[in-house]
Length: 396
Image (cartoon, rainbow, N blue to C red; front, side, top):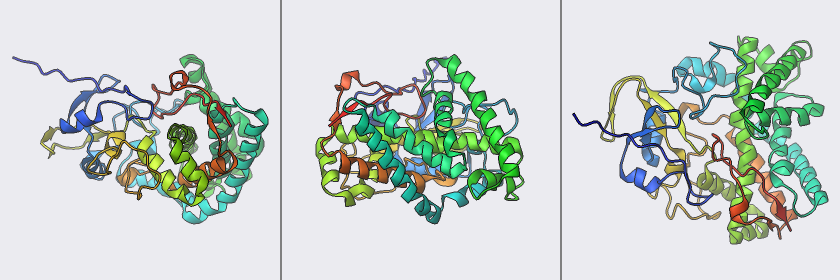
């Protein structure tokens, strides 16, 4: 009896700005099985239309039986055992956690934050200028603007921002020297957040943390902590590295940088194009079949894993013409950078606002900015769920 060999999913990139893996070959093969980094087999879905269809199909579940949360890795855990992550829930269980959070990401609330985000961005750029040519844009701007924003959103004390940023990024692998340091940071981060929960119980405000505790949502302290931990990946980590990767992409495509510097009104379309082109959730979204189903010629069985390859979908030529070209004047389409379906990113409007402010302010203040290091010396977060440069020294 002949045994079929399931190929390993490739995460290699020919260029730092290319999607991971041979996307064109994956699309040509249709929906087929691959072996993901954890060793499990999954049905690989790469066409834009198919990803949208399966992401919103009620027969496809986000509950992975403990296999992971966002993509193929677990979030930092504080040992809560049976407390589920919002990313692993379906239907009413998912909405019970999503709705209390979603009310803090309305267009009105995002507008209220924009002035403060603009102010902190200008402070970061002033610091970048004080440091002079060679300053690292990742740590000076990319990490600090989302850190300030998430602190304001959560209602964390401003004086805790530096500590929070250090703990969060170490727990998420950004500052950690090794796996052991990363694992040590996660309990410390959650111990800090647990302390904040205690403070907010006696000293509530109108921010997200207090609302989850006092808003009558029926959430336990453990559920609040796990929910906040999930938002760190979904809101802070992704935006932080999207800022820096977007700057890298614009500086690598110099005419696009100059176009935005000359016309700040292109900021909105630039953000959408960069989100599509780069797709920092580089490994896509992992799902599970709740029942047997047929789709696109694939015989998907109950409990089979399904991998929605977001970068491939965003580079599908049936979705975007000349998809591998960065064009900030492109008419924005319904890209998949924030996912699709019931689990589409809650904070996407906040992320868009942060990106718009940073790219607009940066090109305005530093129109002559350029990369200091050649491509071969720029290192990237290839092993992480969220992709981006490890550091980005710039000059002007």
